[in-house]
Length: 233
Image (cartoon, rainbow, N blue to C red; front, top):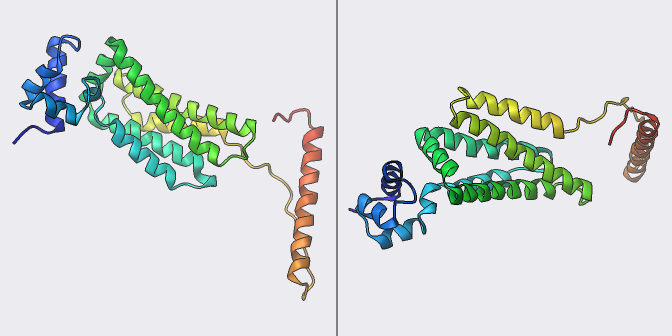
């Protein structure tokens, strides 16, 4: 029985550690894993791809999580999605650190890693922008929020890979809480309105009364905000 994907990955990383990435050819990996060259390429497509064997699977899991959200939970879904990626790498243990050493030393691998990170950021931006109002400010907010989430993830992951972080679960919670506090604006507090409607009032008249009360409340809020020197939009 031939070797599976995991065995090919193990063989590749073993050779990279002993011979170096550049000095290891696909034929060397295939021979070490006990498979043919064609089998290797059916499994991975390139030598670079064997360094990131789970990237496509992670993208699928991230997309599945994002699809389950709605307008009020859009950022929560992105936060959950980025944790999926981080905790996958943490679960890999030393294999993730082996990859980090390789990507730090080989420019082509570093470039591929940056492209992968950009794909996650683009996915998050697209997801967040779906729930915006279509304005330039809304699109910009989605862009910078997605970038902030990815930056928080990258910071915690790098610290863990360098053995500077002993509890990545706690650190990512803290980092993402900072992102949420920065980009989630709390609804402004305001007075509670009590609308008294006489018994027997028709539904259209009730709808009109409620709409008028809401509009008057919004007008008052806008007036107060415009007159406050401390208000920053």
